[in-house]
Structures are given as structure tokens and as C-alpha cells.
Length: 316
Ligand SMILES: [Zn+2]
Image 1 (spheres, rainbow, N blue to C red):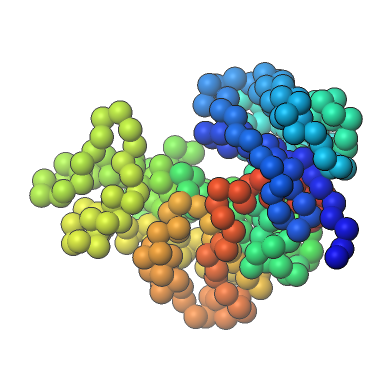
Image 2: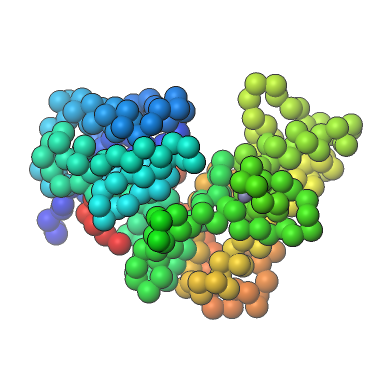
């Protein structure tokens, strides 16, 4: 049996910080979940210090176990080569040397990257992107973002902001306003946050709709999709617009980047009906060089952690 390398991986998401020890074959040997500080509004320095203290706590209970590196995936703009976390979102951009911070906790070399690019690495190492030099991962969840391998290289862009494909306009008929300032962005129509905003906006036009609009929480995409299939006119409109927007985004990326495969992940496409309807809407001509548009085969509960480990192993 081949000798296994191990990595200490950290996956910082919106609700939890997952820390674990992961092999280069993607096996999670142990892991622990901590609350995520992201929603608290803090800047990177504070959050990096929290990640370091959680890492120390994890290591006190789980010895590094022969791990030779650290990998971390975080939201926002990341300069992986210099180990810098540049921005969480516009307005939260207090640059921090995240890799050095985490190296300090246990003296192992650390690599950091954006969470979607980490998911891409997991797909490329273990999923439908295996062995492919031209391949795109698109996450369609609360928001929409992509990560791209082109010619064997992970594309980061000049300001580490490549792949923010949620703000590619897919509807130029002038309709749906996106918080980014543009109209017709894919994210405004096909993401969980976009569906929630549109449901609230359009609900008064559909007095007979059965969709409940919660006061405190967002509308659940699953409820919209279920009611759409039961014939609710508002929900059918929202779901069909989302399917068209997602399909248009996929086609735009296929025309731009000519990938061999596209892998979809995230809560919106985890709904099998949505995935099937999006695929149905793809034009053969647009997709003629793409061998497949796959639903991720990785478990969404641990794909981020595995991706962070693949980043630590420095797998492109
Ligand atoms: Zn936008």
C-alpha cells in the first residue's frame, strides 16, 4: 500500500469551522467542529486568531498524528502564494498573514486558499474533475461562485477575484436587481439568497400562492421547489427562472473557457429535480465540447475540509 501523507485541514464556512486530519487519498481520520465567527462581522485578524486558537485546541486533543502540512479554506479573496487573506467581503478587507498565523500554532508549513478553489481541488483530486486540466466547479448555494482550472492551472486573476461568476448577467431584459449594482446577475435569480429576495418581492402579485414568507428567516429554496412541482404559479416562475439562469451561466462559462467538464455543487443543485431541469435547458451547441455537467459526487459535509487538505498538499 502506498504511504499516506496527512494534512491538518481547516474549513471555515458560514456556520462552522471544521478542523480535521485528512490523508492525500481524501480520507478524514478525525475531525472536530467549532462555531464559525464569520457572521459576527469581525475582521480577518480577529478571525485568524480565533482559527489559530481552535487549531491549538484541536491539536491538544488530537496529536498531529504524523501530519506534514496545514491547509485552510476561507471565504473571500485569498493570495495563496503569499498566504494572505485579503478580503472577506467588500468592507471587510483587513489583510492578514493567515498562513503564518496557522504555522505559528504547530510549526508546519501552511497553504491557504479561497473555499471554492479548495472545493475545486477536492473535485480534481477525487471527484469528476479527476485528471482534467480544463474543468470548472460551480457552487450554486446561498450565493454563486466558480473555480477554474485552465491548462492545468488554477485561475486566480490579477486581484484574486477570478470566478465570481454569480455576477455574470444572464438576463439583460432589465429585470432583477442584484445587490452588486447590476441587473440580471445569475446570483440574483438562481441562488438561495436571490430566490429569497425575489419570492418576497413577487409574493404580493400572487395572492393564491401557498408560499409562506417567514418574517425572521429566509424563504427556503426547498419549499419553493416543492411548491413549484405542485403547480404553485409563483414558485414555478421562481424555479424556472432559476433553472434558465443557471443554464445560461453554465453555457456562458462553456463558451468562455471551453472546459472538458463542469461540476456543480451547493444546496440549489443538490435538489435532483433542479439539477435535471438545468441540464435539460443546456443547448447542445453550447456544450458540444464539454463531456459532462456533473453533480458533485463528494459529500457536501466534508468536501470543503478535503479541499483544504488538497490545498495543504499543494495539489493544483
Ligand atoms: Zn450581481
